[in-house]
Image (cartoon, rainbow, N blue to C red; front, top):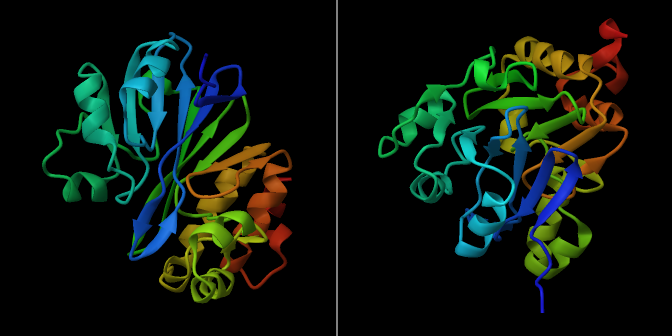
Length: 249
């Protein structure tokens, strides 16, 4: 009997794959990776989840894995497994990731300019307003999909009910990391001191007019992506949420 594919197609060249539940300071979180097939047929893998033989076989059926991308210093746990399985793949990370993961050999450091390998397919928008978290947000042009690792967490009621204790669920609501109020973790919001710089990054992302938003943790958004992002990042401004994107309309 055939097992259902673990790769879920989002667009003609975009797939998501759900990873294991991981503990972060005692709080369980779902995980997710995104695969993008580039115009040359190779694969770009965002936030690689732990790799097993079954997933490796499925991924190999899509194309050759060429790029492994860590969007921030917290999303690096699967890199070593994928690099071992696909030794020809290039490893990319934020400067903070490169400094943290000295046991890995990175081929490139992410900045605001996309490498030639995926220029024109994926855009970069760097969020660096908080000393706790610098993250590269990505935008896939063809599918109009934005990728956020930890800048929006949307844990569902079902997930919280099954994996978080009652007192933890209260914290999730207070922190606004639920499907009903999907924002960045509280510590990131409180430590974003360079808010003008952070707002400028969000405006750049909104200017692409995203249709979908895929996050690493929780329920992702299919459709109405711009409105979702305006609501998600409303904490950055005392103005109404839509004001974040007004200058690009």
